[in-house]
Length: 368
Ligand code: NAD
Image (cartoon, rainbow, N blue to C red; front, side, top):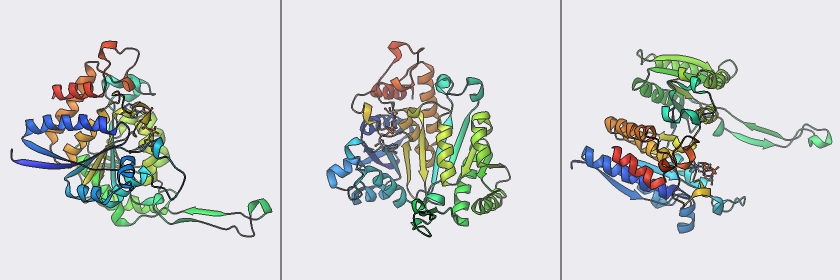
């Protein structure tokens, strides 16, 4: 075997280790077929890292992530570590910590309706035909990272007739932050439907007017890609009115946070949604769902969002596009054959086609 790829595995908490095992299984099949040796380097993040080291994001994990060609994270968190005591470590600090340490400024979330799961959506099937979009959300700037704070009220508390406390958050973007995320979107569009919706609120916000200017400047470098400006309120509406109009959507942090959750519901199932977070170095791939503590250890978690995250890793970090296409096709074929984990089963699912985590992983591996 000629090539090797090092993957830092972060199984985390809850169902994390169960779905990670299926990702490794599938990657080994792909590696054998493609002549690529995947080397797995497991590290601690989240609750399990707190238990074993006292920190949700140990130094060793950062070193392993930096040394890897890609990071594959399952999920972190759970009631065991829930605390309102600000002096106690929390699993989520691990997640934010690794995103920050790796400088992951672009979050990519594909939303694709698989024919076999048409009925899982809350929208009627006729609105879902052809839905296959990629949401590119800016992840390290905007309202969530701008200056924020509180000040005592002028002339005292509101209860005493004064103005009361003032609280503020600031939406701020620099040109380079807009340019690099918009480029991610245009590069992705080139490999897909060649259309970018740049979503902003340029009729009201100055940061959005700069966003729009920069988006158009970048668009000039991509004459083969169509660019559409859309206001965020209109986008929220268009997502449920005519979702198939979107190919790639790019937007700032908070707009993307809200729109990507709205769009994810088009598929109707949390167990099917993958994501990639990219920066200038090692990228991180993870399912959109959490650690599902309610079903952890039962062998019934859906591993497909994790496997779809593997598909994104093959595409974006390893440029193994054919292998990624084959994995996507294998997942679709397994679903088309009627196989379901509990979360995506419905009244029409045959009892003999209900499978657990491991069996679903085996079915995908066999199709490959
Ligand atoms: P969750 O996504 O873990 O679970 C929500 C519901 O969806 C649960 O009923 C769960 O059983 C189900 N579910 C989720 N993934 C599934 C899968 N793969 N297969 C089958 N069913 C699945 O969200 P939650 O319950 O709000 O959070 C649980 C914990 O996960 C919390 O500690 C939260 O902080 C954490 N969390 C972590 C991440 C992450 O690691 N990126 C994201 C969200 C929440």
